[in-house]
Length: 270
Image 1 (cartoon, rainbow, N blue to C red):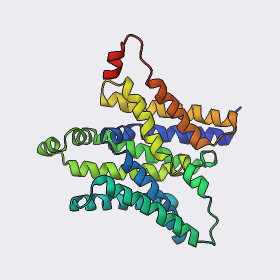
Image 2 (spheres, rainbow, N blue to C red; image 1 turned 30 degrees about the horizontal axis):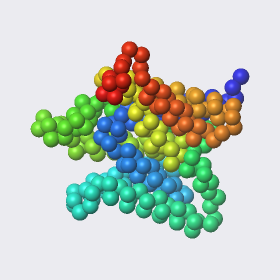
Image 3 (cartoon, one colour; image 1 turned 60 degrees about the horizontal axis):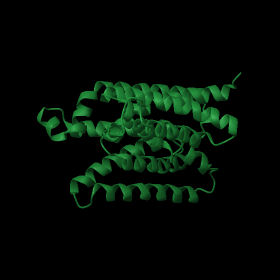
């Protein structure tokens, strides 16, 4: 019989995986993995501000991630620096500012490791409700905006010509990323959020013939990684968040194996 804390961890992890699957597909399609890292690193600044002003942690992380997204959009329009350079500056600057702020708050007990790598075994029923409700909002928004989001990803100029407003789609996508990072931080931690977004989606790519199928498979693989990672963590006494990411990595490696009925050239082409 599984303990209650383990069941809660499974529910929270699966709920998060179902949400990160489709969003991770857009991260891969748009080649925005570094953007995901930048937003994840900014979460530590959100944590520091939450502790300093005694406000809700998830709300603080969401606001900081959203502000970083808007700041990136504004700076990109100036065209003084490349997107990679701006992302590098924002990523390391927000992480460093957050760490410095925490160092000054000597009156606060702060478990940095838990924030960096998550503590999924400590999730509460309220955390589960937030993950599933927040995930439902994210998935409903993606489903509603699927066509303009996909069109803006494939060809932003064509999407704009068809009146789909690709800049608006990009802004919505960034805000959805901010929501996911806010609800995922406690589960897999700041440093591992991007891994759960990218790895299952990358693994799903080999088994998908359409974008919609890839999004569904990515969610499924993420859920499988959560289950395998948590049971592996339970059996081998390893950290839960990193164990989930390792399980996702193993699934990705399996996806690279040649599929039956396909020759080597097909595999290379796929």
